[in-house]
Every structure is written in C-alpha cells, then in structure tokens.
Amino acid sequence: MPHRVIAAALAFLSLSSVPGLASPDGAAVYTSARCFACHGQMGDGGVGPRLAGDRMLAISQFVAARILLGTSVMPAFSDNLKDEEIAAVATYVRTNWGNQFGSVSAADVQATRKLLGIAEPRTAGSK
Image 1 (cartoon, rainbow, N blue to C red):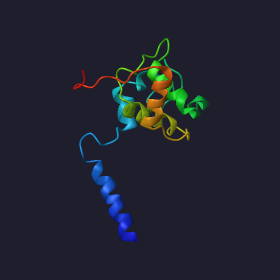
Image 2: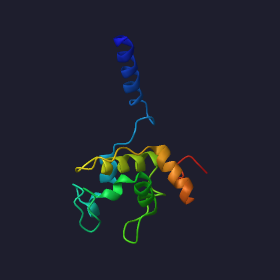
Image 3: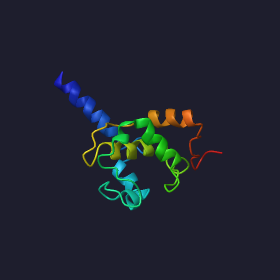
Image 4: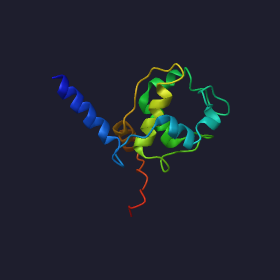
C-alpha cells in the first residue's frame, strides 16, 4: 500500500512538469498582474482595500466576481487572466496574511463567469 501512495504522488508531481498542465502560482499572478501596487505586498492595502483580514474574502464567488469585473478603480481582469490564473490569485489572497478562507478552483471561476455572462479570454491560437 505505501508503494501505491508513493507512485501516485510521483505521478502527480510529474504532471506539473508537463507544459500547460502546471497550475499557476497565485503569488506570481498577484505580482505579474500588479495587484500589489494597490493592495500592498502584504495585503495591507493602500490605494486599494486591505485584503489582510477582509471577511468578504470568505465568499469565493465574490472574490472571483471582483477580479473578473473590477471596480470603479480596479481594472477588470476577465479579458487578461485565464480562469486558472484568477483561481490561483483568489486562492492566494484568501489563504495569506492571516486569511484562512480556502481555495478557489478554476471551475468556481468558470461558474462565476457563466453567472455573470462573461466570456473566457481568447487564447493566442483561438479565433
């Protein structure tokens, strides 16, 4: 039995080395999408609201919708980030800086897109 567990773990880890199958890193998305510029490197806010200790982050659909739609100041990321990237950054802000609200999956983001009537961004190869 322990050999099966080890084999399954190795198979799972090997998937992360296959291009296109690795999950995006939420901290990297937070940095590359420049979320830190308004929300702070440690989620302490500034121009944007404080994320550390924000109880609204407990509502995963709210977080996904906010990232997709933006606000009057925050840009919408629905056309710039894939569902996997939005899920990764949503999970990052929901599980860091003292927040313990759990993860958000790409399926959760996709369901929120559908609810809001927002299409997924086109990829480089799509028409």
